[in-house]
Image (tube, rainbow, N blue to C red; front, side, top):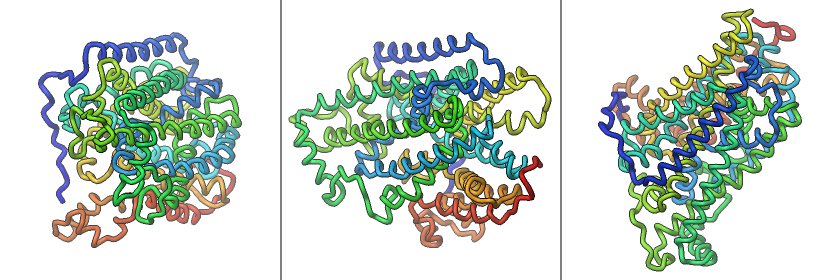
Length: 544
C-alpha cells in the first residue's frame, strides 16, 4: 500500500448551500450569533491575569463545569460516529463506560486532590515537585503533541458534516471542502477562546451542551414520527437483525477479537479514562476551576454519569435509522429519499436528505456545538501548559499582564496548529479506511496517553522515577503506540526491505498489528511504567 501524498487540492470555486433552506441558515446564524454575543459579554470583564484566564480564579460552579466536561468529551465523532456504530453493529460501545466509571472515581479520589494540594495551574507542575523541571516540560510537551493528534482528528471529523451541508454530501470527504470547513471551525473556536479564557469556554460550553441535547432529542422524536411500526415490533426486528442473526441490542461482548468487549472495557477503557480525566490538561483544567478538590472531583463524576445516557441517545438514533433504511417491512410504504451508500454516515445522510426545513438547521447548530465544545477547550489548555511550563521559564519575572497577553497569542497559535493537523488527518484517515470515526478519534488519543499515564501513576503510586526515566517513559509510550499503526509499519518495512507491502501482508509479517486497538494503551502503559520505575529520585524534587 502506498501512502497518499500531501498535495494541496484545488478548492471549490464557489460555496454551495447543500440542501439547507433559508430557515435552516437563519437558525445556524442565530446559534452563532448567540455564541459570539456571549463571548463579547464575557469579554467585558477583562481577566485580572494568567491565573484567572486559565483557571478562572477557582470560582466556577460545579454544574457549569459538568456541562463543560460533557461538551468537551462528546465530539462530532460521537454525534455522527455513534449512530454509525449502532447502525452497522450493536450497542456494545456502551459497555466501555464500565471502565470509564471505574477510572473517574480513581481520578476524583487520587488525581484531583493531588493537583489541588500542589496548587498547580498546569497539572504537569506536579511532576516538577518530584522529578524536576525537565520531567515537567517533557510531560507538557507530550500532552501538547498528543492533544494535537486527538483534537486535530476531532476537527477533521467535525469538518465532514459541515462540508456535507455546505457543499453537498458527495463532497463531504473531498479535501477542498474539508479544508474550508476546518478553517471555519478553528477560526470560530479561536475567536471566543481569546476573549475570556477558561471562564468564557465553560460558560459557552453550557450553551453548547443545551443546543446539542435539544438537537439529539429533536432528531429522535422526528425519526420516531416517521416510523409507523410500534416499539415492540422494532425491538423484535432488531433482536435478530445483527450479523449472522445476532441481536443489535447486545450490550456486552465476550469476543476476544473485538474492540468493545467486557475485557477491553475493564482494562483498556479504564486506562483510557484515567489518562483522559487524570493526565490530559484539556479535561483536568475544567476541574481545577472549581473551589476545591471535592467539588472538582464531584464535577468529573457527575459529568461522566450524565454523558452515558447522552451517548445512549446517539446509539438509539443509529438503531432507529437501521429500521428506517434497512427494515422496509416496518415502514408501511414510507421510503427514504436517498439511501446511505458506501462509507457514508447514515445520520449525516438523514440530516441532509430527510429532515424538514428548520430541523435540519437545528442539527447543523448541534454539530457546531459539539465541534466547538471540544475544540475551544483544547486550545485553551494547550496555551495554558505552554505559558506555564515553557514560556514563563524562558521569560521569567514578567508581569501577570504580560503572561496573559502571551497566553492569548498562544491560543491563536495552537488554533493554527490544530487546523494544520486536521488537514493532515484527511490523508491519515484515507490510509486507515477500516476505522470508524470513533475508532479513529480514540486511537489518535493514545499516542501521548501511554507515556503520560505511566509517569503519573509512577509519581502518585510509587516512590520510584526520575527526570531521565520519565522522559524515557514518554518516548517509550509514543514509540510503542506508533509500532501498532499499520501504515507506519508498511512504510518502514517497505523502505527497509525494498518490498511493496500492503496492509494484509504486513499483518501476516507482524502479527501484533492484528491486536484490537483498545489493547495498545495497556501494553504501552505497562512498558512505559516499567521504564519510568527504573529511575530513582535523588531527593524531594528540586527543579532541574
